[in-house]
Length: 85
Image (cartoon, rainbow, N blue to C red; front, side, top):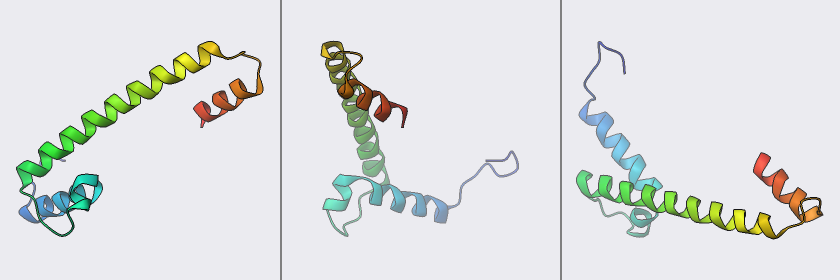
């Protein structure tokens, strides 16, 4: 935001909350029910923390997989090409 506009309008907040509600799997499963902004922000934080744990877990598993592969194998090349994407 610019220095001149330090406040966000109530309408912009409502729009951002709606976007968050759409992005979170937990709130999509609940259907049309509206959660409070505080609950939605807490669910967003929880979801991001889960995503971080998932990324860490996948990274560890990939490291273990790469350690057992022949570096010159076709499988290793496939993994490397996926990581470059």
